[in-house]
Length: 445
Image (cartoon, rainbow, N blue to C red):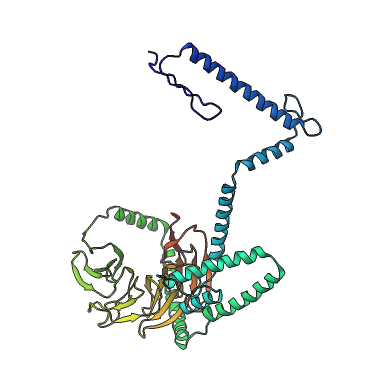
């Protein structure tokens, strides 16, 4: 069956639509279509002639006809000009701005910004910038200072004059002096004592770990394979033992007690609840935080003595609280972070606590004295994860800069930089063998 309706559109040179024919094609419509087709063929022929003339204008009579010699360099030159004309001024400007912004962000990631808010304000004042904007907190100020310093670095790099280079060296020297004042201050006597204790305890734990690994090496391969098969069989049979609504708002952290008979759950409401296992009955409600709980960690010695610090918590209210399982209010408070605390972890000895924060630092605390032993910077953005190695000699940190770092607690040095992730790192953990580390990132790896 033939179509019942045909619609034909033609566009004149003036850009206005001509007559539209509905129904079958009449003789006049056919003649009109034929004329249009002839005009288009004539226009194509003229375009071909223009191209031939352009190719024939150079010396050597470059020709596009078959069998003739073609100078590809000249053709590439003409095509390059045409491609350049295809990009409008706005498109070129947009592309240049995008490339400049990528360059600025790359430079910004390499700039270390002080954590102390007073130092940040001094740096803003030195660069003739307002020290505070409406609604701006300490974290926003650090981001603004990073943006300003990255713009200044690009401007100085583009200037390229010798005088500017001399000024850059002077400014760099001043910055290094200030950075040394912030990053490399002399440690306290308490920090020295803590480093010595950590060194002694970690050596003993490392000796025990190595001895266990030597014993494991004596097990024959067939037995190891059989144990692994049994473990896999047990894991495949895992099922839900119990389920319970933990809070009115989402649960952000879960931590098992060392005795495996209790579990802590922290929520976005700031509440922390202790649940019995496997009955899933709430044993106690801990109230203290006013914002989202970001970190929970049980003390390795939890429950061994009455009145001791059994666990610690950190939250978006910038607070770190120490708790006893016998009281529903905090028994201690560690103050110092200037932005949300996203992770806390107990040292294997149980005497120290590590914390990671959005203020760009991680800190080491003495639980007994509630004293800050160490404020450590080194990440260019917020620190999101922190975990102690099983021996207690090392600690790993990672953050939104996509970089992981391993620190030696005995000397205070950064001994390894873990690169490879393309985006933020949100989690990390040590293997029980003590020498393997796993990280998880927003780049899906």
